Length: 611
Image (cartoon, rainbow, N blue to C red; front, side, top):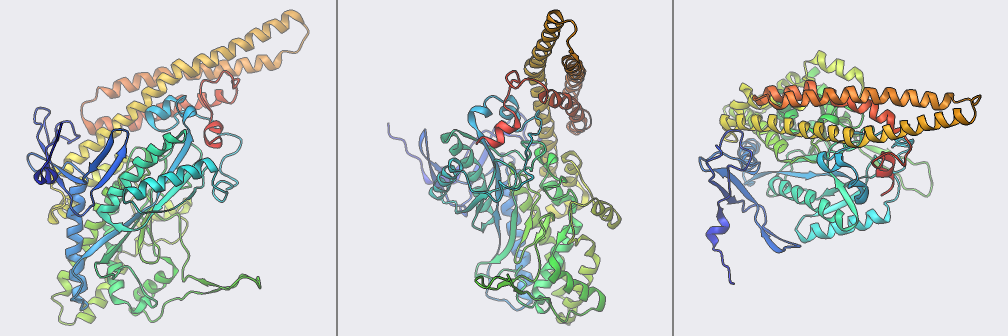
């Protein structure tokens, strides 16, 4: 059989739009949708068990024209920031640059566990994370995994991952251990943002596919193990012209770089104004377990700019003039055989959700399993809005130098509250942020409404990135996604508790009772207080589990019949999630007591230390 396809079929396809989450944009009986080739993202060949497949990066829209995908709004946001950033460059006399392109490097964190042990955990299979599990005697406190050698089994896996990615055209560059045991990270070379988004999807797929060949399973969930660090992906975002000018490069004397200071002040304004929207762009179910813990950025949006730039901002806000910039120095090691090292003008801050790191901003909130498209759509669009507002004023100014100087000073003063260079993990920061008026959005369900605020709708429609209907559809999809994920987790817990954990604990209790009875029969004067105490404690935890299991079963069923998506998501968050935690607590206590031979699943120690 000879099969052929034409160029037209490359450019346009017709998949089923009604089977795709649309948030009400498409009815079930309305099936037609269209794909369109994104020619700016390279097509590639993928070889797997079914043969060689030509893969074409595509956008996806409905028959009625609404975007159903994450690529279409991303491309529109790129056009928006390109147009407005060029206006800024023209103001400073740049007539040669033709495009401003957002570039991104997305660091990807992940866990590796032994596949045989993975298959013995229903929670990992169904939910992607452990829903039960007591901490092992050792966690990550020694940092010996982070700074230790990569195990040979993992190194062989990483080598094959790199080779697979290179074949696909994905420029994977570095890999290393991360903080938590069994946790690792991969970083690519910076690319144009839509290509970076496509490539990150391929990275996640490749990580999971190659793991199976090595008897491993790759976990991309943001928090697969309670009590140890979760996983994110750091979205390193910058703006670069096609002829190599980075708009976020401060140069050696930032206080004299007026173009950079204007761009910086615009971005600070954008982040401060749309902090809720930026937080929403990193919201997913798994990230609720990670954001705000002592491992990831807090749920409060702030910007780290470093000592050097903060000093420049202080000068501008206090005196109206910036006359100097802090410079790096020489770091003397004190060892004759080691060279003196160049010391940067500022330190880094790993607790900041949005940190300036030399010539880019690192958005550290994004979850490890999520697409990086949404945060970059928001970053591009909020930057475009701030650039437009600046250009609208400066293009009409009679005295440009004075006008731009005043604008920088005004914007920095107005949005200085968003700058925070301190410890984002400290409790004191939560109080200070509240005093500054910064939002602290702790969960996905609290974050979702930011998509359809008046300010968000007005901005997205002004730049043709989203229509109001498209935003409303995404709100519905996200509420529904949250409810479905929590429902799956709750039902998995119910299944594991009823069929595995409680029966195992009952067996253990029976063994204790038999032991108690036999010892008392054989030796009536023997001290059996240990067996009696263990039996009493086990029985108490079993009773707690039975009550918690009945409650979780009841509330899960009740929440499942709520028809309104927002009300249902809030009910799952407010009622089901606490009920899940109540069931987990006695189960984890029982794991620390029940004979390991009787416990029905691999422990945390088995999973994260035996890879």
